[in-house]
Amino acid sequence: MPSLDAFWMPFTPNRQFKAAPRLVVSAEGLAYRTADGREVLDGTSGLWCVGAGHRHPRIAEAMKRQIDTLDFASNFQVGHPGAFALAERIAALAPPGLDRVFLVNSGSEACDTAMKIALAYWRSRGEGQRNLFVGRERGFHGVGFGGISVGGMTNNRRAFGGAMLRADHLRSTWDPRTQAFARGQPAEGAAMADELEARIVALHDASNIAAVIVEPVAGSTGVLVPPVGYLQRLRAICDRHGLLLVFDEVITGFGRLGAMFAAQAFGVVPDMILFAKTVSNGAAPLGGVIVSRKVHDTVMHGPPHLAELMHGYTCSGHPLACAAALATIDVLEQEDLPGRVRELAPHFEAAVHSLADAPGVVSVRNIGLAAGIELAPLPGEPGRRGAEVQAAVFDRGLLTRAPGDTLVLAPPFISTRSDIDRMVAMLRAAIEDPPPSSRGAP
Image (tube, rainbow, N blue to C red; front, side, top):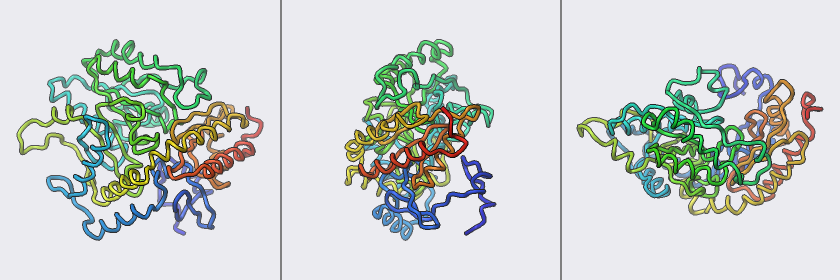
C-alpha cells in the first residue's frame, strides 16, 4: 500500500479521509472491491460516468486496440480518424441542427469552451458588448473560472472570490413547499423561468447578454428536477430576446434520463450542449460541446490560414478517449441502455420514494436514474449528517455521494430491480441507524 501523504485529493476532506481511508482496488459491473475483498455497490456510476458498468469488455478491448495502433496525436493542425469519427457519431445523436462538435477532456473544460464560443459568436456578429452570462443558483458548471462564474454553488464561489467573467443568476428551480416529495417533474413552477425576462433581461438588457447556461437537471446539488414547462419557457424567452441557450448535460447526457440527451427527453433544443462523463463510460477523460450550425458557421471567418477560435487543449480528442467513446456509444445503442433506463425508472422512483418515511428525510427527488434523498441538517452543522450517513452506508456496501445533507443515488444503467432494492435497503439501514452525532436530530 502506498503512502497517502503525497496525493492532494479533489473535493475531499483530506485530513479526515487519510485518518480513515476508504480505498477501492478493482471494479466490475455494478461493484467495486476494497483491499480486504469487500464488495461495494456503485450507487453513483463512478461519478455519474459508468452507465454501462465497470470494465465493459467492448470498451476495454477498443482501448487496447487503440493503444497498440496510435497512442497519441495532437489535433492542432494535424488530426487522426478517431476524433472525426467520434464527432460524426455524436452529431448524429444530437437534436437536429446541433452538428458541430468541439472535443475537450472534462465537463469543466466543456463549460469554459462553450463560454468562449459564445463570446466569439457575438464578436463575429459585431456585438462584442455581449459578455454577460446567466447561470442559476445551485447550478454546477465545473471548476474552471468560467464555470465558477456562471455556476451557483455557494462553496465554490466563496472559496475563489466568485467570478472572473460577468454573470448573473436565476433562482434555483427548487421549491421545498411544493416539490419536497414530487415524483419526476414537479407540476408547478414553470413560471420560475419568467425571472429571466422580468428581472435579468430588464436589468442588463438583452443586448449585453451572451448566453444562458443551465443544467436541465441540476445533479451535483442534489438532483433538482425542472418543473413541467420550465425549460420550454426558457427557450421561448431566449428566442424572444435573441439569447443563446446552453444546456450543461455533463450529467444527463448519454442516457441518464432514458434518452441520449435531456434536450430530447424534455423536447427542448438549445444552441449548445455540454457533455462529458458517460460519453466514454468513465474509461478515459473526455468532454465536449455540441454546437449549432448557426453558431459554428458565424465563427468561421477571417483569413483561411488562421485559426478561427484560439482555443483548445493538448489532449483534445485524444485517440484513447475517442476509442473509448466510440465503443461506449456502440454499447449504449446496441444494448439499448437508454431503453433500459426508461424501463427501470418507474421501479427506481418507487424504491427511492419508499424512503420518505425514514427518520430525518425531508425530501425525495427523482428523474430517470437519478435521485436525491435530503436529510434534515444537524443543528449548526450543515452537511455533517449527510457526510456521516454517506460513510455509514459505504461500510454497509454502497457508494453514494452527499452534496450537503442530500444523499445522491445514480446507479449504472445495467442495474436490475433487485440491485436497486439492495441499494435502497442499505440507504434505509444507514439512515435509520445513524452515527452517534446524528442521533436525536429532527
